[in-house]
Length: 330
Image 1 (cartoon, rainbow, N blue to C red):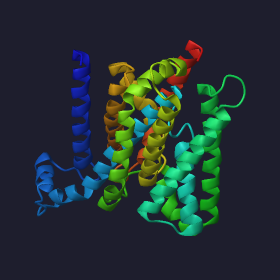
Image 2 (cartoon, rainbow, N blue to C red):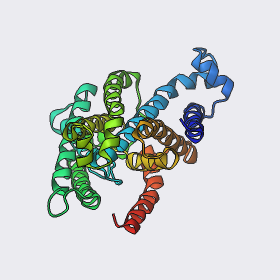
Image 3 (tube, one colour):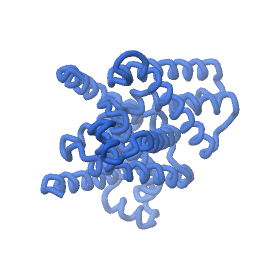
Image 4 (cartoon, rainbow, N blue to C red):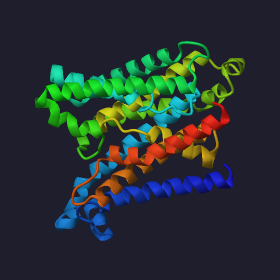
């Protein structure tokens, strides 16, 4: 570990602690440090301290979903060797959302297990479809073709979800806010069910760090180094789909976290996936938690859903990334 990497690791860890503390302390009613500590210690006699246990599940959900999206985006970029790899841009989040809305609208499905299962199936189906369409024609699955096919697929799924919501008013309230993307409806039950699934998928992704480093050198060279390229891609895609699908089931389709975070981490840690993957998880948690705090502070006593905040932050960065790719002839 170099000195700069150690420094940035400490910065990321400190930022995660700071944003988590801010998520507990700030909202429609600000809470002081003494009350935060009292609330975490179980003393809720005071009104301010009593707010802390209510905000804690939301904070944990923001951390978990942000980490899943950050790690999932880094895995997608590594597996596809596509700098535009992002669950939202590749239509994966929209596919997960579409499957969940179909289940709620036509089958009355609302349990956490079935919702996460539907989201994962929808994410996998959308990802496979986008990759197949982007692979057509000369040159195979180039970053631009994947981005375009993902954008079209995401638009199609979004239109279908909107049509279902408009024609079924009985589910519009349940789906409307979730479709925007937010962490306000957090509960310990959700986290208890999703935690082991996300943990297993995250561990699988982290174990692929070395094979993904080989894959970055090209398929032929990776195969020459003893890597089973197809298996690495399959396992990496599986981990990313589960991470993004479950995150979407928990918080709705949230864009740009999986795109922005890995690029920012590369600036500080380089392209070594042994650093890129775990730090992307930490940085994703920081970004989503900070976006949630910002949405609550700016519009209080109301709030701006975190999906809107990340879109506002991520869109200009996406434009910068595309312009840099164009300058490099990618």
